[in-house]
Amino acid sequence: MKTVWCLGSINIDLFYDVPHIPAPGETLAATGYREGLGGKGANQSVAAAKAGAPVCHFGAIGANSEWVIERLESYGVDTMHIALSNEPTGHAIINVASDGENAIVILPGANRTLDEKGLKAALSTAQSGDLLLLQNETNLQPEAARIASEIGMRVLYSAAPFDAEAIRAVLPYIDVLLLNQVEAEQLQESLEQSLFELSVSHIVVTLGADGARWISTQSGDSTETPGIKVEAVDTTGAGDTFAGYLAAGLARDFRPAEAMAFAGRAAALKVTKRGTADAIPTLSEVEAFKP
Ligand code: ATP
Image 1 (cartoon, helix red, strand yellow):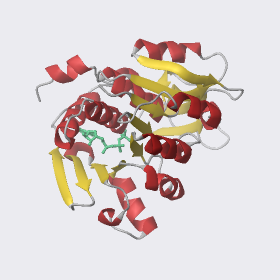
Image 2 (cartoon, helix red, strand yellow):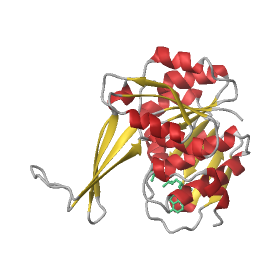
Image 3 (cartoon, rainbow, N blue to C red):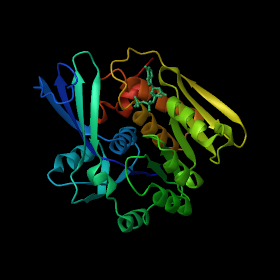
């Protein structure tokens, strides 16, 4: 099986239960507190590892966050290339109000201090045919995509959080562009092109409860993976679960339709559980899932 390399963010998600979202100037006592592993990169690495692929994460954390490394390793992620930064570990302060509304502040911190020399050293051990997963919460995406494409790796890029300039910079080097429906619309508007006109071979648009679509721009073909009916309790991390499982499916040489169905089952199962990285289903749970 091919290795999935993931260059991506690692965040600590700090959840505060609050009676309501604090107003400007207001001080509020939280009624509950939880913390967990998060960040789009870490979530995607965990998903690919839970799907059974060999996964090597390239990223950075700050001081006093060793549990994050231990958690990633417990899910099977190789953390050898996670550096220690002088900046704090990236974190998200998530206020969750009793009516379900939330307000989030993210500190990118160490995630934006990735070092190019370290990246080159890490990817010098990658093989042609391996996969590289990228998102938009770190620095070095264009550099990583270029090096990976020169090695003959397949590059999958989640254009999230949406940033048209960042997408433009990596587009020449990627094989599969992953977008949700909102990002697909934003991209077409900002580039004034339809998805079929973009210079990337494959595009996957996830459609929430309606499933996902694989578009091959050169042939003009598109394949739909239908949505799976589940009782959704928390859709956080659904997109990352889909991306990680899709990469793991492609690492197992699944055909696109098969990899999409695999990813769709995993993502549907994720939305039935609360949480992010820790709530991503394992391969055996996905195999046992009979929708
Ligand atoms: P998020 O930001 O919430 O992680 P996203 O906006 O990146 O997600 P979506 O298109 O909402 O991505 O969801 C990704 C995939 O998760 C979908 O393609 C689908 O397979 C699955 N999914 C999401 N929501 C549901 C749902 N309500 N029921 C079943 N499957 C779902």
